[in-house]
Image 1 (cartoon, one colour):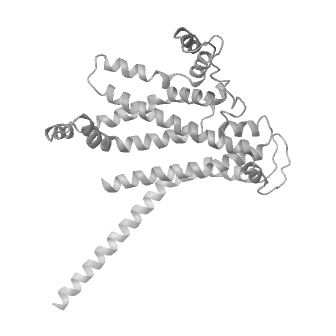
Image 2 (cartoon, one colour):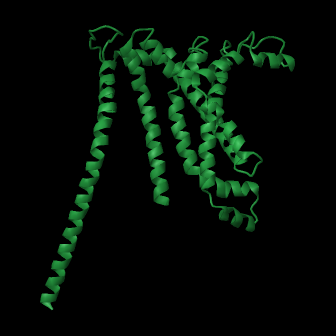
Image 3 (cartoon, helix red, strand yellow):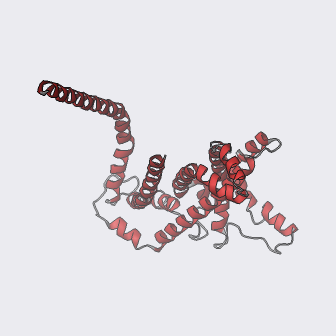
Length: 313
């Protein structure tokens, strides 16, 4: 009995050691595979970030060789600047308004295109046109449409007798930001449509059939079957689009350059104005560093949501 127990203990020890060695080898192999990507990310992301952080603590002027150390002066100046805080507020309004509108439009249009419509493939292709067009071309078309003299929107409003004077779509501080948001929504909602439509394709039809048997109506099926089925896709798409919209520069710069006044000034355009025309590169970089915590929070939120969904699955 003692010999048999000893043999069993020895066998268990060998098995434990073998498993531990195998796990260690697998971990080492995984780290070896990740090493090139980690090195590349360090070179492409880590080094520029550290360089930008260093510049933000110096009085670095564009084109100047010397950059005196000024500590946190760039940050304290920005935090005491009303233009900076207006840009922060405009950035959040622009992002929340754009993402909320794109999300609603994306879900509604994706649900429609998921049905058995005549020429469904054609409608799906038409919906993707705003996303496929070059940004410069599409935004310039919108800028012409917003023109207060020859714009098609003012023409249509006049023909419909909605107004007796031209509307300054991009010149009125109260209208300019919603007008810019409308262009961003038109430009970005196809991305929501195509991703949510892909998510709808993964929801099993059997769940809808079972819900119908249980007497669930259209709204109940949408709330109990469709929403849980597409929620992971919607969450990833929303957060990804939020990060892109938060950093959007081209649409606002082409349309208004942050005007009139600072009515459409966002952090992305403020960085450009400070760093390039204003020549204060260190101060402009400081604005981008202040944006980092918000973007990191969005990325952490995305990773936590994905991890939680994987645990529930």
